[in-house]
Amino acid sequence: MPRSQHGLEGAGEWENLQSNLPDFKNKKVLDLGCGYGWHCKYAVQQGAKEVVGIDASKKMIEKAEAVNHDS
Image (cartoon, rainbow, N blue to C red):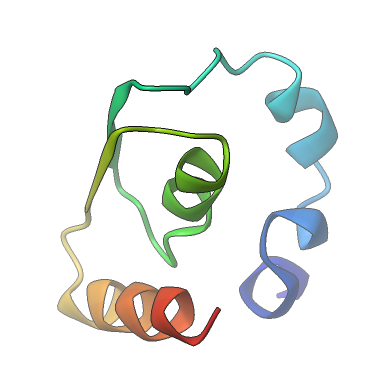
């Protein structure tokens, strides 16, 4: 899937979703079902004070950690 390779920009719905997100500056963010962690990464880039991503899949958490450590 494009989103797995290109992050949020690869998700067709990202433009619409992004416009509905709040200001993350100095906020604490919890992402339930974080998958690859793209939304967590975005929150950090937008100035979130603390971000926690949770996913039921151990493989997704491992992938999110790898993806977010590489960039």
